Image (cartoon, rainbow, N blue to C red):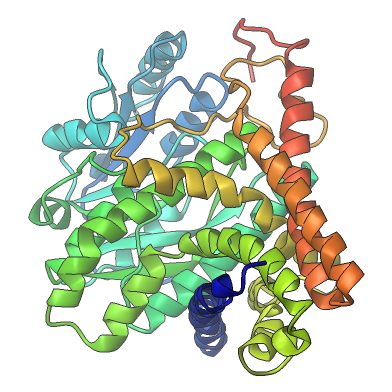
Length: 497
């Protein structure tokens, strides 16, 4: 390797390592803050002291043949005074889902349910546009929102509404999972989401930092939505976008970690990829949109810092990709400078902090009083396999920098709640993603790095590179095999869930 490249490589690696240390150190801070406030995840059961306010329940739906029916039934069964809430089905469907919903709404109306079917013939603004259109005619002082894959419990409104105070913009519940044990993919997803809700949301809300409405399983104060400027469709995460605008307007929010809202997890790798891409891109779009405003504003330094970590969390994937390319360069230089990779200083600290993701996921299970010890193998697997999604996030970042506009694409669901059900052959399947070819190539590159590290005697770096390769190979090959098998089992006809 040319000697003149040594200094730039060391500087670049040090910057990436320093950034990773900052993000991971904040992860430990959130874990400690979550541990301090984990009692808030227990059942609180507040009481309704005043007359129940009028609530509008909004159900944004787009081509959800398999799950729309159960959602309508669940919302029709909410325990709340019948004359104090209405249901709006905000339907953008272009298939038979629209007629199925229309028939079901008529049937529920005959049972005395105050429910309306608002069917748009265009998808202008996508989900944000549907929510904004429904808000125009919503009668409620409060707006409860459920995506099609959720099944709210009967006492949801009774538990959530009493938590509103005068300056509360929204109250967010904790997601639970209808099909946690369906497959390895859904199990790993459940661990990841549990960590977000039992650590991140808990710690940020308890510490007085900005946290976001998660797009569903929450209730907004209508006046707060209007005061913040309403729903906007210029990012792929309209929920996070509105949350930050509300906080910038001086509103506060409440996290109801003790209230569970069960939902269906994506069962296909392609659907999971789409969901993660949308979340990553939307977060980064909000970072570009709001971080300059926040840092120029009159906010405490801690709030500014936490907002930055919150909105740019997906940059960890970019840093991981950079690390993958720095490793072989460092290994090649280490042949002439054997002490270059000695486990001291920043390198030693990074080795210690590599355990942070596992501690993060384990802590969430512990806070939720689950058997975390028996889950250790899965927790470490999730920590390793997270590297399989790095290029999916990088694509989002590159497209943002290129100014490429992409439409909002919802994550398809199939009404899967137990292992006896199959989603293969159903509609809404997502086409093959060519990105997996690059993931396979990057996996092979990391195997090459692992071989160099083994040959040079740097076994710890060999393990890191091998784990990177394992994650990339797992997600890419699993996606490919799943996509290939579906080509022979696809049935475009609607099937009753």
